[in-house]
Amino acid sequence: MPVPRSRREQYSEETREALLTTATRIFVERGYVGTALSEVASAAQVTRGAVYHHFKDKQDLYRAVLERTETEALAAISDAYLVHEDPVAGAFAAMNAFLDHAMDTDYAEIALRQGPIALGWEEWKRCEEQYAAGLVEEIVTALVSAGRIPPLPIATAASITFTMLGGCGMTIAAAAPADRARVKDECTEVLVRLIGGLVV
Image (tube, rainbow, N blue to C red; front, side):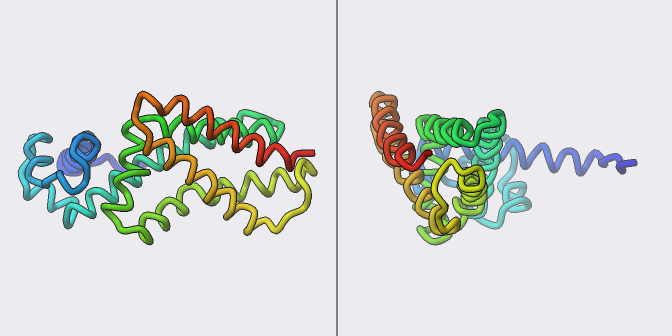
């Protein structure tokens, strides 16, 4: 039987969640460079001490925001894949779900635009791989195992596919909001032709 949380533990969790939600909004609106921890604390109605209790600095806060954003996105993308018995249908559903996320302003800013600025290219890339590379490799493995694409070196094929999808996501995120639907359609057409050409 789980041990009930104390009021202090519950308050701490609620404060952390409020900080993540508030920081996400401010990072999206002002960017990583334009955001100050004091502004996040004020908007979340907590002290700066409360911020530093949960996060050692602004970068640590951003990392937590990115991790939450990617966890939520991965869950939705995985659900889109798993709902299909046919691995090809599942692969394209997962691809479309990811491209839809790239159109979302919050995801585009947090995961694709501000991430490299906040964390540096190498750490941001490692974070992205942590959340998405496993699912891409799972999908490629399923396609090969089902005989729906020719046998390929799984790790290499997954790495190339991951990079290609990420490039499309960043292309969509870099477009003006009014243009993102069009750019997403163009990315979808390119990916369907490239990936669809392998399907047997």
